[in-house]
Length: 102
Image 1 (cartoon, helix red, strand yellow):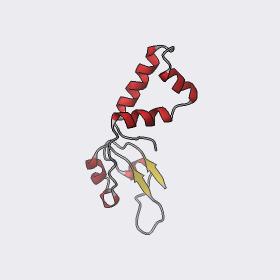
Image 2 (tube, one colour):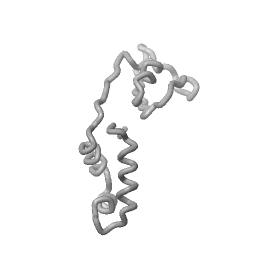
Image 3 (cartoon, one colour):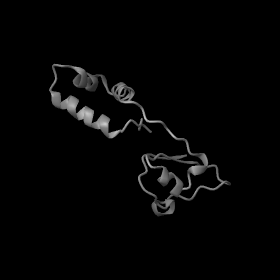
Image 4 (spheres, one colour):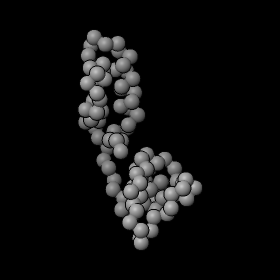
């Protein structure tokens, strides 16, 4: 089983040393992409699962739930420097509502 997360453009599996999966082997290839066209180009449309984008509140709560206790305290505490919270918000925004966590 091979997971390829956040694939942004088509590439040949053989070019990176991955044999092309076939129906006779028991190997599986799973890829995630923000771009439907990339899935089609990589031949993944046969078993494509479309994920819905989370709203901002759900995305922020998921982001916070994955932080360590120390990081959570740094982001949520009004006593800490605002820079930490601003950086956390930038990371959160870059996810675009997608739960990218493979």
